[in-house]
Length: 482
Image (cartoon, rainbow, N blue to C red; front, side):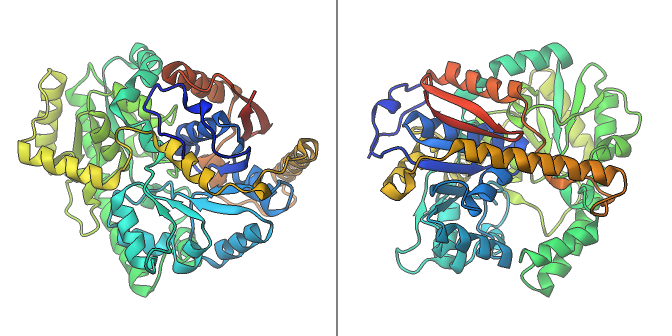
């Protein structure tokens, strides 16, 4: 097996244990996944594999139609829905090998509840490898769906967490400088209110959760109503907090970062005319987080990221809830009053740090190590490629007919464009009152976006110089050794 490189190791590409394989990596949420999955694509292409990275239409869609040669399909979900099961069977029938890592992680909540909606014994059995974030999710999946040692789990860690590691601060240095020049000193507020600010109407959301087996029974459905009520109450207190925070600190910007599924304009509508507050989806969370004086959240994965990379963080819990996502709050300073929060932020802005006692720090580190396997040593990206290479076979090495693939992509893009044009004139499919959730979560990738990520990774890690990429579709790219 090839060795795991530490950060900055540029020699990993010298050691290969597999012939060139086809690897297809879909992205669902651009802001959340593009950096981690691009690093994963680079790590695989560095070893000579051919990678298609991007939207489901150009990865899973083309693979399912037989337009891409058999390869490794690295899925973000193994949901036990009828549609997912049918798709998995279709991929396998075409010779693809399925691996998976759920990008939503479930690390911010009771993982057993999460795992029952994201996996099943049937879907797990179809995966040749399930890449786990750490011992916590691996143990839960093994207890729920394992029979002896036949569950194909690998505690690789997640490429998303690679970017959380403290030594990756250098990767964000250029972006942090640009943010500081534009916004000066700022406090970051991370939204975790997709339940009530979702671009979909609540009843459409409930129906979708039911249809995809996220609501496993009636009690789970009724619990969702109670949880959404609690979220609404917490949201009201966050609006009050943001306004108060901006008023109390006129020399410091308050940056509000919407959740990927929050409706466009939701936060601006809630806050109204609020000087000193900027609502933006621009860029990725990593750069904003590292440039912030402090992060304020409630049960958000950003709290875990801040704990790993060493950014001061406050969990604002103004409303007690049975549905509190405790893990991110446990690694943050947990405050339940507005006065206490304003005092804590004032202390941070004046150079005083948030102090945790030794017992809290030990508990925090133990929690992080249970949830994330790749906090040091080998990057999770390289560990996952190691797992893929163990699955290598001649059936996964067929060369794609890229002219045929590109023709299919262009034809689909043209049909999609014509459908949007006809819809704008009131023809074709009836237009939904809400914008496309797919395009909200994953708008087209600009050339400048992917080139910046790739060039910054090459410069920071001192790797991937032999890897090139080219555009396939408006949301997809091909990576391979040049």
